[in-house]
View 1 (tube, one colour):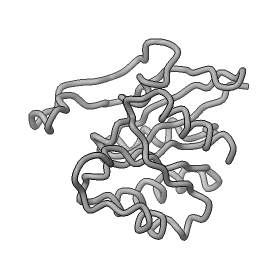
View 2 (cartoon, rainbow, N blue to C red):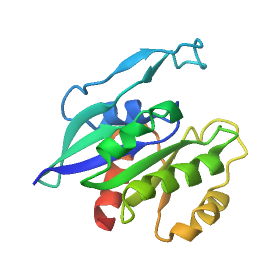
View 3 (cartoon, rainbow, N blue to C red):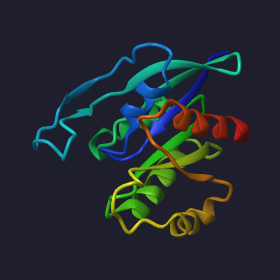
Length: 169
């Protein structure tokens, strides 16, 4: 049986970067230039999915990154079935961080009610109004979702998210 994990979250939250950091092979991606121009350093976005695999504790995990745009939300229905869980990445500098967290958990749970989550908050090194306690409180109705700070560029940091998710699954 193949084991599948998903990386989800809004545009610019670090999904493609995290998959590249954790992968044991060159990820397959569907990046295209942003139609509205660059968002800071971000010049491209995923329009279908990212895919790669990682060996973790003698298991091969197939990892898929979902596109962050709401217009591509239909990809969730395609990729969610059979997933062990979701690494939900959120950008600490986003003004909609808490709404994004609820929206993603609700939409993914609508596709699979027993789906397990771990939340990784990226860009915590940048100025923001982000509060880990407020985010945990926001997600409290969905008991059992760990919230951690993560550097999506660092393999060890992303590996910690995967290991946390595997404990839950």
